[in-house]
Each structure stands twice: as structure tokens, then as C-alpha cells.
Image (cartoon, rainbow, N blue to C red; front, side, top):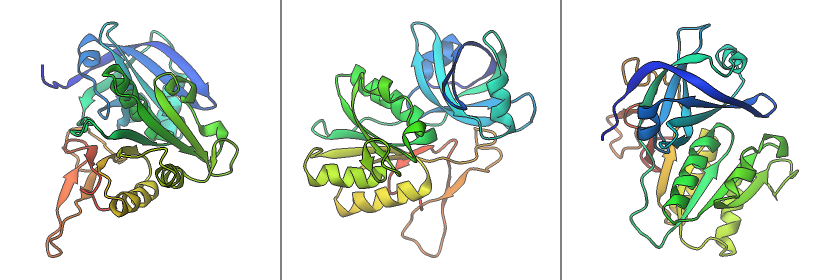
Length: 265
């Protein structure tokens, strides 16, 4: 089948505001729904601007020919998206990027860790794993309980752990500290990590993984203007051992999913 890219206008068939200024779009396109995988993304073009906005796939249903994305209103582009209605069409490029790979070791416990804009691809991955008979552990972190979303949906097919910086729900602290506690008390015994979130979180998580000989994948957030390697705005430095020569990768075509120790943080 391959992963052919489509540039087209798609129809929005459902819109939900799941919490304040956080929306989900469900869109219709048979071929994109068939090819979308957890970790891949699409780029949407606001009518108000020329720069596309990259969003991770949150879900896809090949039988219904639909797929979903989630976004927060943070600027002019996403503000325009929030003004759209069911039946409107929007210009997209999809599917883009690579996907999360399944662990080769069948005895590991998949642990999906993230928060904010990192939640949608992890939701998709947890659902995909569940469909293959592998229940995952999902650790979501947020500033407070109001910014923890999709938790009720995730509970349907994964073991869910929550952390908040202010202690308003779940563990009092961040998601990496919670993972460290779960490993220490043997609630999670043989983790394989999938993570998506801001660089400080990934940096702390990498340190924990190296200390405990844990493997996994990180999905990196970056400004991906074109989505297929032309603008090179999403270049990230590889974590190489050659100090005399820097090497780079492009999040949009080499990623956004990389082995956890591939990219410098």
C-alpha cells in the first residue's frame, strides 16, 4: 500500500470542544484514513495565512474513511481553525512523517508518556496497541487537572496514570517523576517508552531511561512549515559521537519519531 501523500481539501464532518480552547476535528478522506498511523502527522492551511500548521493524527477509522486531529487555540492559525463549522473544507497535506514502531521484545510493557499536544499521537498509539491485544500504560502530565484531556477515553483501552504540577489530580509532580516512582515500586517492571512532549520533559526522561537501560521512541515537536523537507525549518541535531562534525535530521521526513537517543536535546 505504501504511504502516498495527498494534497487536497477535505470536509470536516464533526467538531467538538473537549475543554476550553481545545478542539477535535473529524475529517473525511478514504485514502488518508487508510494510511494514517500513530506518530504520523498532517499539515493544515489556515485561510488567514500561508504557513501550514502540523498536527498529529489522533485517530483514524479506515472503515468509515475518517480521521481525527486535536488542537489548542494558541494563535491566529488555530483561532481560524476553531471558527470552522461542520461541512466546511480545509486544505491539508497527509499523511506525513513516520510512525511509532512496535517493540521487538514481546515481554516489554509499552509505556506512553506525554501531555498537552503530545497526547493525541499517544492516544492513537494506545488504541492501536489495544487492537493488537497489547494493553499499554499511559502516563499523562499537565499543569493542572483542567489541562488533562482524553483521560476518560484512554481509560477504555489502557492503564492510565495522571500527574499534575499543582497536585490537583493524580500524582503531585511531573510525568517523569511519576514514571520513576512506578518503576521503583515495580508497578511497571519492564518498560518500553513512547513519549511526545516538550524538550525539558524528553531530556529528563532520556536521563531516566539511560540510567535504567530502557529503550524506546520519542516524537519531537518542531516547526514543520512544509511537511516534506523543502523548507528545512524542522532540522534537529543528531546526538552523534563525532564532535568535529554535526549531523542533522529533518523532523518532517526523518521523523518526527526517532529512537530516544538519536536527537540532541
